[in-house]
Length: 454
Ligand SMILES: [Fe+2]
Ligand SMILES: [Fe+2]
Image (cartoon, rainbow, N blue to C red; front, side):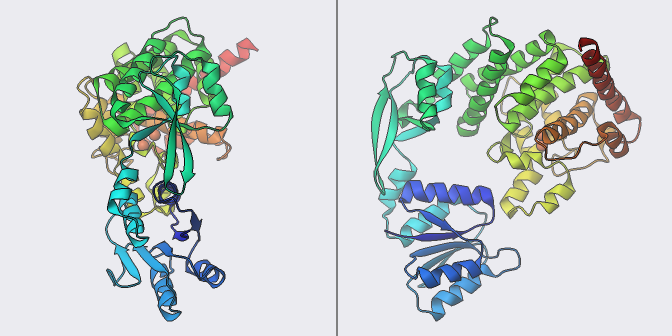
């Protein structure tokens, strides 16, 4: 059985490679931090088949050190270096230049281990597609057969049918699978697109159900949010995802108008859904309240902000930690790989271009998304250009920062600080002053309401 060492300090790329090498090649990966602990491990396990590493980890010339060690000790180990390395290919090393790409690295890894392209292609483009089990919590039947996957050998899986197309099932039976630790169901590749349409339509029906309690409603919005994010990321905008997004935005506006603000914020903040969902929903709600305090509220204006909140960090949804970066200094300090750095730096612009491809989007949303970190061109972070922005974009920027802080504080990652004073310091001047005052008014109203209720 092959053994592989992986040295990759970017956690997201590390996870991607580890999971995909295990799934597609059937080999488990031993993680190491750098050349030193890898060489120590080679002393104990000299029969390692392959080492995959970055060219450099911080100041260490990782690729070079490992290459020299293999060569000097005449080990039979192969090496894949990701990044810059003077030797493109020889009997020891294969260099993967250019932006990191897990799929290319997995292919190179398979080639080095002697797995045929044909076998790998089958694994990379499987006959079955995985769908999170929790997506079935919102269904009572399925539009196609649903399978679980059982591992038979290192590269061999068996798919066993668990739900027949059209059969009805209840929430408890899905919860039971989740309770047993099952995370993914599988459906045949050729039915995937139909299935996502079916799932979107079911969620829209549920979102339209006015009899749901507030908890149920938030749960449905949260679930729909993650389904929509995943479907848009995989398939782009389809009639089904457009309709689902529209329903989510409408429900966010409707619940805002019907519910006491503190209660709604508390419920969203305490929901079990993702950071991106909580951040987006809270942002819509806080921004809606600011619009009211600014006498600028209309259903369309709130919809614009809710729509922008839904999409503004969509390209960072796979690695939510990246969406927490809110200043250029934080980005510089984060020690991200070049690819992730670019992804964060350009995320506002990328999200704005994505949203443009949805024909139903209201005017102005694209601008709000593009400028949500202050830079008019959607690249990076800026605090000098806000005077040139329209009111909705200004409201969005202030509320985005406020909500980001609120969640970080709730998760005990930051100290409580006088946020309004911080915002005033960061955004002096009349333009943002009005928006900050609207936010301050919201907080004061909340405090006095809380007092009268106790
Ligand atoms: Fe954000
Ligand atoms: Fe952002």
